Image 1 (cartoon, rainbow, N blue to C red):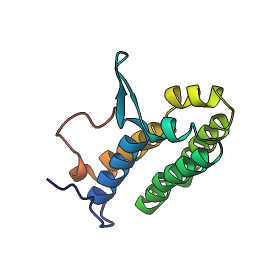
Image 2: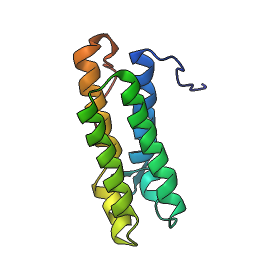
Image 3: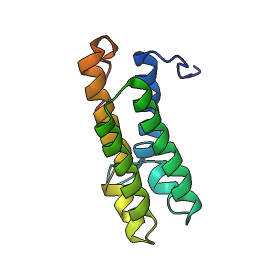
Image 4: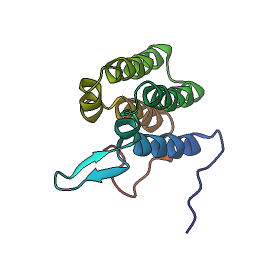
Length: 133
């Protein structure tokens, strides 16, 4: 079965895309033995500079989608600060890699988007499993 993301600008399509991006960045894999989810943010972040730039750009994409949904500017600023903080702390060798496992800016930003969608576009809610990890 082939999985494709919707390309529309409607709220349901945006919900699917940002949820998939957050899952990719924060919960793609599980560390065996500890049962801890990790994603590309923690793994690619191990590559100095380039890893942080790539994951920051992917986090910024989530903020861009939020802007297109019409989230208030103060929420967009908060989301942007989450990405900036994650990038800044991630740039510190070793400490930043450990922080990527704890401070999940993309998960925080996804929760803000989902709360907005649930309030302003309740028809986009997904019932099929735990969305708000």
